[in-house]
Image 1: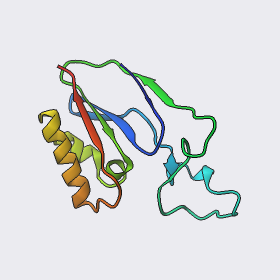
Image 2 (image 1 turned 45 degrees about the vertical axis):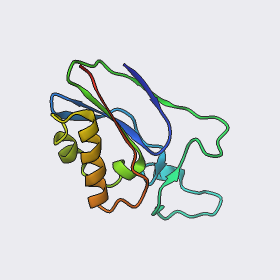
Image 3 (image 1 turned 90 degrees about the vertical axis):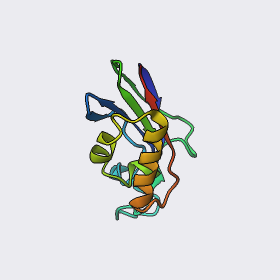
Image 4 (image 1 turned 180 degrees about the vertical axis):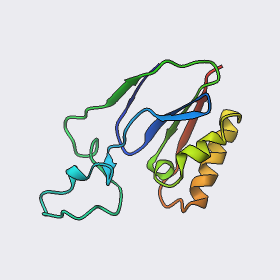
Length: 127
């Protein structure tokens, strides 16, 4: 499988009940070296500022190839999911769920943790 991503979400692989993050996020504070240099603000950004896509002329996607097997889950989540939950413990709870139920479990966990941003989730199960 090949996956490409830009923005403030992330992709994960749940394989043999082990979670691996496939893509980084393009958002502060995940990349503090990209703080706003025009204002001289060197304090950490408390919100979520996308460091690629919006307003950029050149976008460099994060591309990854990954071997997948029957039973693996790929989870694509927006920053509302990625930034709110302990992904390791919550994602392990979806290992045996069907994709629709897995999405609902992740959205519910994110909402229970505060859910202040958009929460979008896609779960793909390889059969």
